[in-house]
Length: 128
Image (cartoon, rainbow, N blue to C red):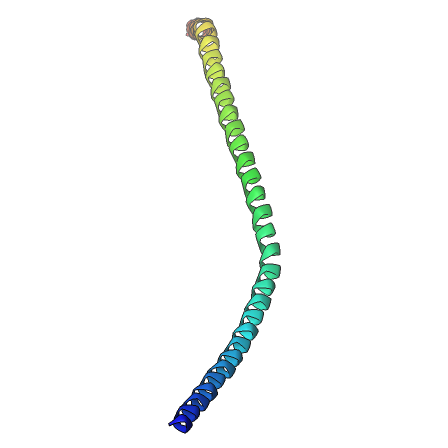
């Protein structure tokens, strides 16, 4: 019986040794995979850092451009308001000039027309 127990212990030790060797091999593979993953993550980090810096730079430039566009739109609106005000002033000036000059010009034209009619009537009487 001792022999059977000794053989059972020997088989158990061989089995435990095989399991330990298998676990050592698995752990070596896991370590290799983790090393590869670490290298890949390192490479990705090296490649993404410039991209992230560029994105940061581009976003700041876009913000500056939109701020400038807002300023330009505000200036255009102010200019349009000024142009509208100038146009209103010109229309007002035109109305004032028209109201002041139109009456005397019409009177002068009527006077000239009357003089021409009078001269025509006078010359037609002299010829007749």
